[in-house]
Image (cartoon, rainbow, N blue to C red; front, side, top):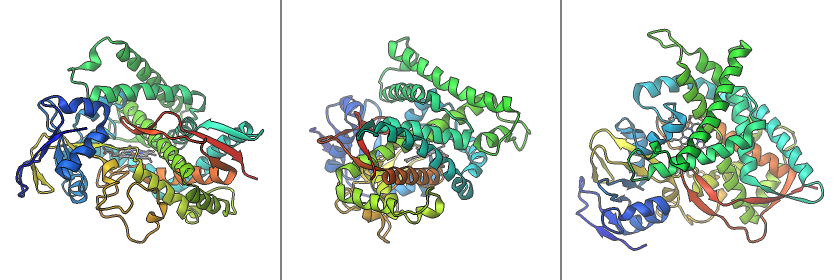
Length: 458
Ligand code: HEM
């Protein structure tokens, strides 16, 4: 990729240097097809704060920890989620916790927060272990005659979807998991295309891809409504997240959430609560398959456990397994791009940011920044066992500040339980020569199938 840089002076408050490939819409095709390569080229040429003009817009990528910290924490109030990406994502998840803003978001966050308290999460371990055991039983049957070769991403999607359904929404979606997963893929791929489409209101045209998208959202809606209806018919409130959402009352009016709002929150949790974790586990296992020494160490640690279930207490005995997940989240952060919309002008990294500019943070490039990571491209889980923590703002797989992922502790415990149990029960390997690339869509999925070979441990 060849491009040119326009370097104004770098005085505080100076204009952000712009990286251009071809004039006017030049960056658009690269945004659509090769965003990470585009970012790397712009960063190499222009430095850690760089604009990528696309038509009349000038999105600015910020790849410097202090500036990232300011956007997400220090001056977070100035950075709204009224971006194009979230606007399009609303076509699927509506105006739920992930996509809403301001006082409305804060109220919804306060309602949901108790479902994620440490003690509650500790209580989910039993369900996480039980559902993982179901999967292991199934995989053990498949590998009874030797080795089972499985589509690991698909297995993880099924499992994490069942876990979020059972722990937070009180329903087992096991029977519909593949259907939901396929619908989700169609819906998210379409959203991804819409985000970078130059056609106004592209989602409203009666095209085959929009029809496929609408059908996929109908499938997802059907599942979400069946979750809500089942709870209503049961006549029980339940103490899980769904119960909390259904019981919440507006402080001023005393009214409960509208059906539409309930639908949006359930859809948000259902989607945000499984796809990212499934990707994280797939990348972790892929990286372990490529790094036999790390795989050996993680396997030995998991097999040294003396109890069947892995709970909060046992996680302390699995530091290396946890570090493998942390390191995979560094190299392949599922939320690989974060976008914000400044409400007022600001200064980031010494550069003036005008209100209304799209500000982009790319955890993928940030997590590989050579100034903050030694051997940034290498899989070295032990770096997370070091008592020196990463520089503030340099490691943000769950972001930081008020909009930090509400499911962070849930996801980290879940990932260690699933990975720990898998390594205890199976010898894990990748098929010879397997190498997958990245698919930077809404989340960072592997490009193609991650096949994993499982042999029941002797
Ligand atoms: C490895 C797994 C996960 C990763 C990497 C991840 C990452 C993230 C990130 C980066 C955000 C912030 C997005 C933004 O503000 O632009 C976020 C928000 C969120 N995540 Fe996660 N997440 C994971 C798992 C989960 C789980 C398990 C749940 C629920 C059970 C969940 C629910 C949410 C919700 C509801 C939000 C919106 C929070 C708010 O804005 O108040 N996530 N996640």
